[in-house]
Image: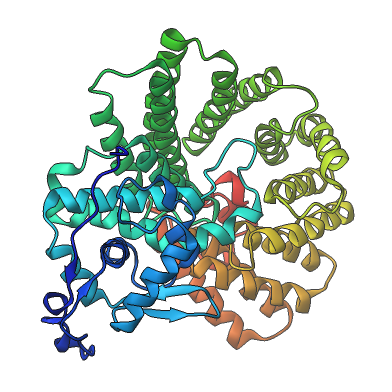
Length: 510
């Protein structure tokens, strides 16, 4: 015996096809699949039915603890071809992908008992984890990861939904592995990077449920450290999601939970260097929470702590101080202290440009930093220099984040503002159209959409296109009234200025 679990027995194809005629699927002849093809079919029933990349099915196969599952690419091809002969799957040779009908998936899963379902579910986790590049502090915000994540995300969502919704999994919700918890966390983080936060909380709840169950049992020091980091990440990502949704108090609560996890790890494991980096991230997110709660001075002091923590972690020069520097630069530019913002951000920009170059296209952090410096220059009265920095930032953000990301839209709004000052209304109007489109496709960006609609209306007024201008202004005011509770006196549109719209928006997007 080699310690592997015995593979599943032959799968009777006729039983799988009895319910498939309803969907018009051609039934296969009465035959028994080989154990290898049967194991592959059961794994396919766990993933999203469309776009199942073949690499996913064999890259991590050697770690699958089922003897029958195909362990090499050649074995996989034999099993795949057997499924193809029975019309159980479809294959795209151009995309190297398989697809399987959802009715067939349901039928395959129904014929497994709870223990077997759990076994193949964990195989799915293992296979995904082999091709999913888990995020590290160094690879955060690196654009090269995103096409990989986008390709595999539907399968991670499927694994999440099976765990959360299928009654057969109800008693197993907490019986997953640290690998599963880390994968669900990472899927949430990827969606945060892409500005999609509305659907991430179930990932994080599930991750926490798994870790909670795991930590009830005795752990080795290595397991304690790994589980602690996964648990801390889940609190971190919930805090960031709350930031996007404008809920500073919920974000602060998650930061408090996260702080408890880090302090426990320090006291129990002495994880000094890694925890110093994590404290930098924790302080950064705590400061954002303060800012959303309109506690500006507390936010500034906490960002300074974040900056110091990152400086004390790792070798110099390093790029870890980027985010507290960006945040301090933005806030100082907004409270009338742009020189202090420049003193913090300028050295960080120099380090980034020395390491990554002046035209970095690998990380949107560079674009965010250039945008923040543009704000500082505008606040210093250096409008043309600020506009050039904003345009440089837009080039990076468009390449790294894409046209429809909220940060790209924020930068387009800022550039439009600068162009209007120069009388270039036509260019500004086109950029505002693009920003409005991006905001309207992002549910939590209603305030930014309202501001951009109002600015578009004002530009059209300046261009003497009054009919269309009134339409945009009416849309802006309708949104404004839906997102803000006013007192007895409600300002009319004619009384509003840029500052009145900026106050509706969190500091980062102004």
